[in-house]
Each structure stands twice: as structure tokens, then as C-alpha cells.
Length: 220
Image (cartoon, rainbow, N blue to C red):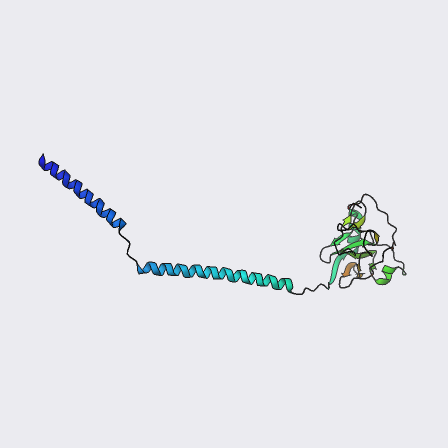
């Protein structure tokens, strides 16, 4: 009996000693490993390079954007192929509004007057029963949309109103909408020259005598 008690105590003490040794080893400060220093140094170098690379990309983007903003832009326009004459006339008739050209930023409108003494005919801005009007208002340069109900161009900025021929009828605009030279080739292709704006009719010009067909889109 005494022998078993002694054996039990020995086992207990041995187990306690193992636990103490394990705890001591866990609490013992870890020796510095030279490899850890190299790993930490490499990590710092990598992070520094990533940060510097990000800053460099940001700087180049900012610099490029600034240059693009300050770089002079050629706004002289070009000669734009607006489409076939018959197709344009069909669209104007079918949809009941001018054809807007996104590339040239102008409207193609129907203008039947072919009298040689007509101001627009003499200026070369009428061809094949069509005329090209600049989208800009002659007041402060806002884009002037076409109102399908009144059948007039109506400026949403200050209320200037123009008939289908771009002649100012109401509002603060001092003159009508600018128009561009237009030609029709032998195969019926309509070409608009946006390099020059001409034949801006003064206020009071009304060659079409067109009255509003319905409600205005921009309140007076």
C-alpha cells in the first residue's frame, strides 16, 4: 500500500514538473532569429516600394489630367458627312423634327426657299432643300433643343425662341442661330462644313413666317 502511494506521488510530481517546464518554456523569451530580421526588412522594403509606386502613379495621373485640361483644343471644326439628302428629308417629314448630328453638333432642317436673292441661298447655307443650324444659342451659347409641340427651337437657359429656320422670334437672343455651309454631292450625300459659321440673321428676320404649332416646352 505504501509503495503504491509513493508511486502515485512520483507520477504526480513528474507530471507537475512537465507542466512547469512547459510553462517555463512558453514564458521564456524567444531568441532573435537573424532570418526574422531579414524577413521584416524585406517586408518594409516591399511596402515602401508599393507606397512609392502608388504615389508615382497618382502623380502621373494628376499631371496628365492637368496637361490635358490646359492643352489647346482645335475647335475649328471639320467637314461632316451628314447623310443622304433623301434620307434626311424623309426623317424630318416622318418624325416631325430636325435631324440632330452628334459629330458636328448641328441640326439639319428643311428649308424649301431656293430664290437666288435669298440671304441664305446667296451665303451658300442652303442646298437640296436643307440647311444646317448650329446648336448654340446666339445669346450665351447654350445648347438649344427643338420643341416638338411648338415646332420651334427653345433655349432652356434664358427663354430665347427660334423658328424652324433658326430665326429668333422671342427672348433675349440678339440674332438668329448660326448656320454652316452645306453642299449636296452628285450621289446625294450631304456635307456640312463646320469650320465656319456664317449667315447669322439679325433679330427681326422672318423668312418662313412660321407660327408656333402648339404649347411651348420652355415657359415664357
